Structure formats: C-alpha cells, structure tokens
Length: 144
Image (cartoon, rainbow, N blue to C red; front, side, top):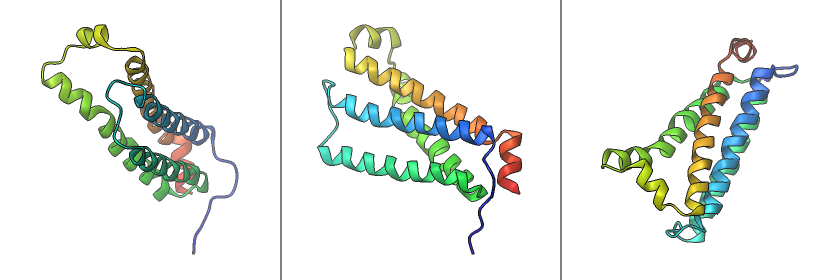
C-alpha cells in the first residue's frame, strides 16, 4: 500500500523542487552547449542518454510532492551526492594536475565559458536545493 501526504507541500519543499529543476535545466543546457565547443561530446546517442537520465530525475523530483521520505533521500543521494560528484570530479582532477584557472579562462572560447557558468549555477542550485530539502518545515512534512 502506498501512502501519500495530503495537503500542500511547505515552501521549503517547493523551493527545493524549483532549485532541482534549475539544476536539471543547467545540465540539459550544458549538454547542448557542449556541442558547440571545440571538443564536443561523443555521438548524439550520448546526449539522448543524458536527456533520458534528466527526464527520470525530473520525475523523481516531482515525486517529492508525494511527501515520502524515501523519495527525499533518493533525490538527496542520487542528485545531491552522486550528481555533485560527477560535476566536480573533472575540474578537481584538472586542478590537481596543475591546471591554472586564470590560464584556462584566458584561453577559453565563448561556449566553454558558458559551460563553466552553467556548471557553477548547477552546483549552487544543488547545494541550495539540499539545504531547502532538509529545512525543519520539510523535515516535519516528510516525516508525518
């Protein structure tokens, strides 16, 4: 038997959902912009896989309105932990290998700068979404 929470989600949950969709939108936009960079991603099939993943994540985010705590934890772990790791591993490896941000920015073309901005907004949206998702009002709503 599936139980759902009746009533309207608190502002913290609605804010979190909006921020998760901001993050998803940044991911979709980044995928599209990467096709205009000097080193575009692999075949279009790769983009199709990414879009399928984003579609699944969007469904999971909408499921937050069910009020089920398991959904909240699934979003937090999949998008908050694994998703963030996938966003920051590449830049951290580059920095660890001796990459210099000023040199990178000086050599970057327009699409690459857009990708960087999208990535930063994406990470900030995820962090803010996580904070909102675990605010006291959200905690109370998910646990009733």
